[in-house]
Amino acid sequence: MTGTLVLAGTPIGDPSDAPPRLATELGAADIVAAEDTRRLRRLAQALGAEPKGRIVSYFEGNEAARTPELAEALENGARVVLVTDAGMPSVSDPGYRLVAAAVERGVRVTAVPGPSAVLTALALSGLPVDRFCFEGFAPRKQGERLTRLREVADERRTLVWFESPHRLEATLAAMAEVFGAGRPAAVCRELTKTYEEVKRGPLGELAEWAARDVRGEITIVVRGAEPPEPGALDAAELARRVAVREEAGERRKEAIAEVAREAGVPKREVFDAVVAAKNTRS
Image 1 (cartoon, helix red, strand yellow):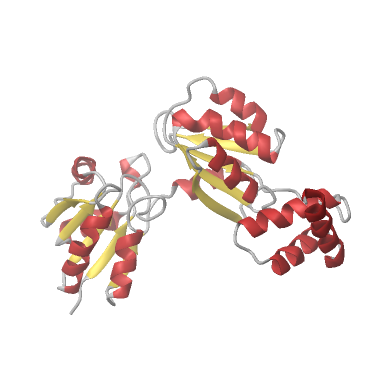
Image 2 (image 1 turned 45 degrees about the vertical axis):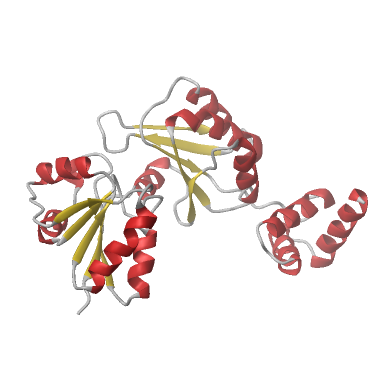
């Protein structure tokens, strides 16, 4: 019989937000794989839990090397509980490799659901929540960051990002440049903690605010793009949107069809714009 991999959500700030099952799973695990073993022990103490199994570190630096060891333990019947510093494992945290290895070996994977910074920030932002997409962390390098932002500039769903304090100002400034300084957004920091703060406003204003040495765990929520009025986009913009989709791996035919649908114009008009742009460059 194979074992079970348990993805255990942990509090994003306040330990009392921990699901009751978390303490039970920590006590029953044969192995607890933790992103930070010291933080795990503090959390276990706060919950009155006593892990009886082996505790091992499982973080970005050793995730690839440790996954085979844990996968083998699962195959041999172990119950492995995976926890990260905050939130759900594998969501911009270690975990994906182990889940994939477990699935490949036919090992049962289950979860202890818990708090989520993504959903908490989205709910508090005051922005539309009916459709959204999570983009993780923006690239560190400015050029790569701008490229990623341009790829989603026309996305109509609300966008959610994680960011570190020392890159917040640069990322918000880049978002203001690509999305427009007036695009509504919210910066949520230290969620559920003593100094929780949600700062709402246009991206341009938020970028200026972020220059004041903002600290803490940060989630950015940005309103999606407004749909253009039919026929409002010129040929150059139509061609640019097709190019962005092609750079992201979409075939030109599909990119043209999707841009035409979004812009409310015939596909032939978008095709002609792409050809004209190509002729201009050559």
